[in-house]
Length: 366
DNA sequence: TCCTCTTACACTTTTGAATGGT
DNA sequence: AACCATTCAAAAGTGTAAGAGG
Image (cartoon, rainbow, N blue to C red; front, side):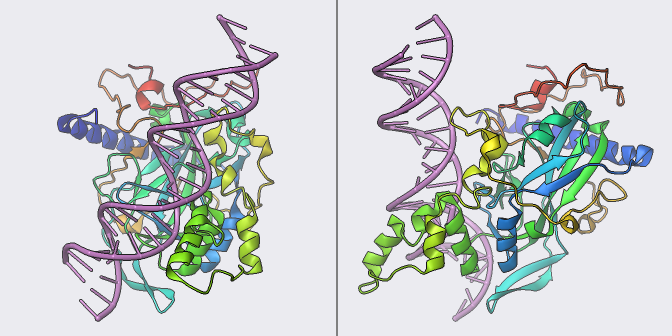
């Protein structure tokens, strides 16, 4: 690790300062010029999400961080092609309950435990002009979930046995620092993306669905080596059993639902030379209109589970080496002008390639 | 005893450097 | 020299199973 404890404390403090500023700024802008939303979002891998949702989606959380599967992939529209936007993801606690797997179903089991400071994940392409966001799928496939409250890797800290719902925030802002002055644009969430955080899968059907659709779990499929090996070792007469038609079709389908498995990487893989062009992604699965939650009247939603606690919102940037690009929040940094008008441009601004995105880089420091 | 969490493991996929051809 | 395609090893990601701890 490149940061000692003292610097880490400073890092955290700066994070909280930044996000306190961000939050107050967002709320202020809402009151100042709340505009009718024009932005729309579609859940690209909605079909897969619905299959999980029908059973009761579970997401593994580990100390070191575990990716979401399916990951959140949305398509945005209705953005000003020349305006700069930041896209963020947050995970909202659903209800104030703790859940428990009992008798083959999820049931409420008391009140929610105190939650860790909420985190926002800034999409690594942020900021980017509207034409970039509308031309490319917005993928959060690199997002990791953890139950480690001391996490310093920038992962989303969740509590096991609690239900969460991802929410995508679109903020008009030229850079991360300008988030505090950027005008909020829209927020979206999809009911079928709700999930319960767990440290071990409770529902066998969820396990099977994950294995059948997640390429990394291919080894556990009915025809996978791992499975066969296990069959050979712990069963004597079942080696000849054929998988069910549904199982075999699922297992053999290399990248069906590919929107969620193989091609899920989406825009985040765009820098890889081996990455297929985004245009080759399978046809998006349309989310029904009622699944699109319009922006709330007050841009930033209320979080009843947080009560009136002072909000701390570590903003996570999951690209680049963790902590390596610690925020450079210096007093010498002049605040950006409050929403300076965008100079007219002859053509849409070129998309900014962001491979290792840091606040300091955005601010032109370092 | 039950429930939840951690850890090691074997497996697959992804990534990026190295290499060779044009 | 520059570009492209291929190869290969390391890194990363996956669920399982056993065991620890409250």
